Image (cartoon, rainbow, N blue to C red; front, side, top):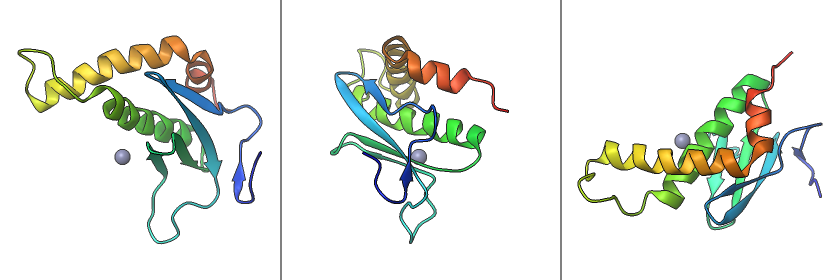
Length: 116
Ligand SMILES: [Zn+2]
């Protein structure tokens, strides 16, 4: 159900599976009115909020929030010999982005769709 101030648009993905978790995606006119966030990942609530704006910008925001979520889910423990922060991040993104693309064809279709 879409609440006031939210819209899901005609054909944007409404959920994404990251690791074992399914996050609900909402597209919002209203974000935090006191701060200029364009996107937010709420890991306790399994929700990703994306501010409605230019469609290409929204795809960038979605990708940005998915990276936060992947690092949150996959970034806990580095493998042996990969203790550098950057290596840990890249490792999380390597496993995580592969899983997200494989399990979410709706996200891949949306992000790679041409914008008019
Ligand atoms: Zn961020």
